[in-house]
Image (cartoon, rainbow, N blue to C red; front, side, top):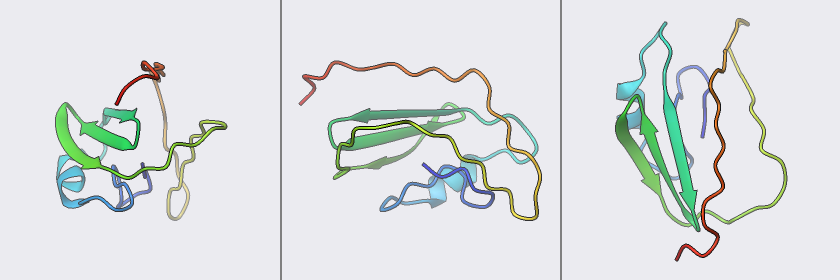
Length: 89
């Protein structure tokens, strides 16, 4: 999921227009990304933004990256990671 300025909430291969319309410039924005098997669902500020199928499961680290064109800050708060039941079909 992208947090780059101008692409907030976009996921490769999914319709980006809905997520972009839910972004609140200059305010705290709330994302909820749920990945089950090969499907990712994104809620953005309490509304369903997009769904993307065909994601290849990966192992490794979870990373946060901030890209702010021209410099600046992107702040994160209240991050929660929950492992879901591995037997989801």
